[in-house]
Image 1 (cartoon, rainbow, N blue to C red):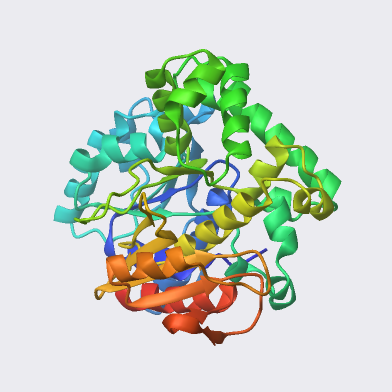
Image 2: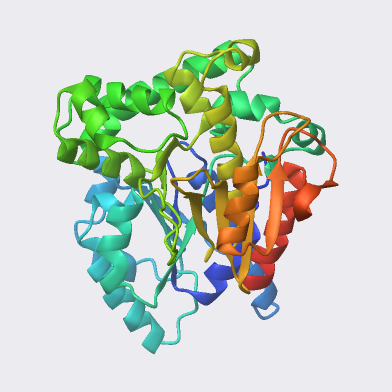
Amino acid sequence: MFDRQILSELDGWMQEFPAVAILGARQVGKTTLAHQVFGLVAQRRLADAAPQSTSTLTPPPPIYLDLELPVDLAQLSDPVAYFAAHVDRLIILDEVQRMPGLFAVLRGVIDQRRRAGARAGQFLLLGSASIDLLAQSSESLAGRLAYVELAPFVVTELPADEAATPGALWLRGGFPDAYLARSDAASLRWRAQFITTYLERDIPLLGPRIPAQTLRRLWTMLAHEQGQMLNAARLAASMGVSGQTIARYLDLLCDLLLVRRLPPWARQSRKRLVKAPKVYVRDSGLVHALLNLGSVRELLSHPVVGGSWEGWIIENLLACAPTSTQASYYRTAVGAEIDLVLELPGSELWALEIKRSSAPTVSKGFHLGCADIHATRRLVVSSANASFPMTGGVEHVPLLDLMRQLLRMRQAVD
């Protein structure tokens, strides 16, 4: 059992809001985390209760309903009556986006309980489709619901010895079953089955009727072009579909928290800026599975190695950054370029160059980009494990150290 770094943050939201939603891709550990949260909630309720007998103080276990299972869905045929019958129980609703009409019911139940003096932490919602969930709940549960995104494992969640040499996490990715597999070959088999299950079962459950082979081709093409600027017209021509279809497919993969579109820098600038987003398959292990790369040796000899490393670093950093952080990249037509720009609370503006080499160097384009955006901090992240100054006011900071700095900022702000 690995401790997830958002556990204490999630517990804090449970003390403030009647409903909390954990968003994350399938198999990322949402259910396990939900039961860990219940343990914290139970301990707190025991501590707050007046001294009574142990049997009386023991809180009832949570109710877990998976809304993709007909037997669980049937229990909510009359949700108002069901919730009224379990007022004293924490109710965990998994794949809640499968029942969009439930949000309006939850609003009425929560408001009724508030008037009766009910405490926070009544509902824990788990969802694997972020845009749908946000759209369905934005009006119904405004002010009543907090969101927390659960990413796959990141370096700061590993045991100390594994965090010091995280090559296995980069190769296998952060899905718990993939990372904890008994061998690289077993991990690759799990990821291959995960991809097939998503294409053939999970995506059709969400409604879109997209041929599995078509979506697999797109997903594989994105893996080959990991970290490149999106050229929807070229992708459309390669697949024999329209640009609008490519945009729709990408929207779906982003909605499922499987793909990230990193937007270009959007502030006013006199420079001629590149305006296309960069696209990443979010989990490095899925990138390697789509390309059938089962070992570090195969990965290091493949052209995708640089883009895979860059995407993995970005996902690790964003998993630790304060929730209000705005992430983008910067590129001009004349060669100024920054791999990652983080707009952080307190007017902090970090410019990051991502290198795989343990002896990184910084290009002139990075310095030009930092001057253009007036970066407050210029950073290089690489495979080197030491901090040291570089020319032009640039700092080299190891990934783990930088993640811990972002976590401290997140804890202070959130």
